[in-house]
Image (cartoon, rainbow, N blue to C red; front, side, top):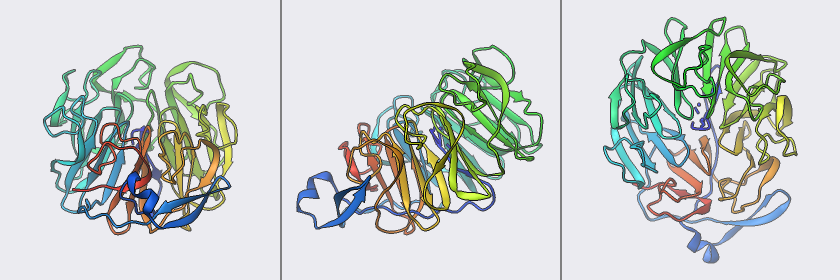
Length: 415
């Protein structure tokens, strides 16, 4: 998700897979950039050039995780005891620890019994737990927490005025939830019509109903736009369209009601980034269709041209998971190959380079990855052994390794 579902970016930014949700990925052992010169290396290739990566054994005790979510400049995770932890930027209390102090290692937010999902926006977080309950924290200047106020909260607050929740998704500064009666409700920022209720109201601190003209199955949000998949396989999007992220083939700047996106087949997965979106079709899971912002090559079609219609992208293998960030995209294939494309300015691919690429590019990795999530300029990899590694920008400690040192190789998140 760009901020994770932005589920994610934004989500999540944000993978949504219809059917069973399973992940496998891999990452590279690396303690720190300072050790690269003396480490024994392995040959690896990225975009046709040979590079090397270290194979090290960090002495710090690793942080163990079961689920990872990544947003703009911070990260969150849950463990097998239903505890949620966050680290990185904390300007608006988005770490949920009651402070505004950034953290370079995970801090505990609390215990969420029967944990289901973490969703993250630019600077707010919500946890769906105990079947249908919701707690949120962080920035609330647009009413995105849903607690009936515009006051930010540095610790979790229970959201009770929405209804019984089936799925939650967070965008830039807005939030949407599918309720048990198949109703979609959204709240928060509406400057670009991203709440989808047809109004021109700039923000809403209370949930508003979105008429998608059908039974809704999944929802995912970008920074200023929203998308929903219906039971009949119709995909609809609404909100900002300045980067063609609605995918309806028009140059309309925004839409405050849902418009249809013709992806040309039955959707298996879909994901939404800051201002771009991708789907995996059931009839050929080796191909993506993506549209929207392509300023850094994040669509993967070999150009830097925005696309207002779904454009076919070949990734060279069947896709298991797709995740979109602000300006980069990654896909985990069923054979455990990892491919990324788009911006790599901070080494967020985790391959030791900082080279931007506009086509899916193989990222060498050691071990098996269960889940990968990407944010603005960092990426995190959850391994099969429950350890967690992150790469890219570390200005706010979002890599979780106890430093603020940028790393183009994955570093281990520590306790």
